[in-house]
Image 1 (tube, rainbow, N blue to C red):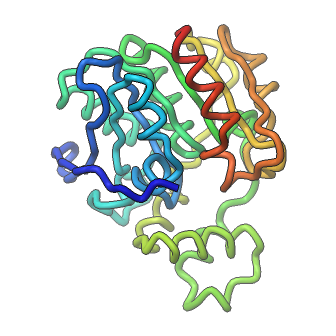
Image 2: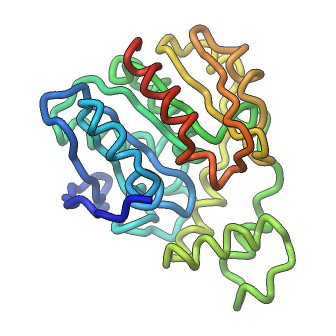
Length: 258
């Protein structure tokens, strides 16, 4: 785990102040990182070593704190967290940095946001890495209302739902705004049709842990896409796959050829 926090900057989009870091090789190919639900740019990309891994490989590494997360503003309206709305935050960051095109890598909710970005702005997405979300992108990943309820419960001890307890504990660990996260989980669950997934022309890598009971099959999602490669991340669940060495090695090889 790498705990060295990079310097963050901010910009304004949709009347929200959104924070990001811009590190690595300033003249390298840009990689835009979009983190998962209840996480942040630090938790998802710095602490598991992605910033170092990509930076050492010569990439310009950019990561946003999604609205409702990290240092960014935290609206309480679920409609503010539709994935296509959050995808526009990512596009606005590329505009702010005057980057016409980037490799885009998202994990879990960030993978969903990345797909909406690729569908709306295909010219901005050079390649896609989708981590922690396979066929759940199109078929759903189960019932999330208990997670929203768990986030706003009086305490962790009041939560009996297993997945709800997991996300409540994670939110407490990351010192997140649980009211904002509850709004986010209620608003960000829109699915992508298989037909729309098939419209994406960018090459894609889909990495899911073999013990992940949330994401769904990477093979099934890859099968409906034009240029997608599935990756099984051995022995990892949803929380631990993100920093796995197998995943990192595969991503570096994929980006080199993308």
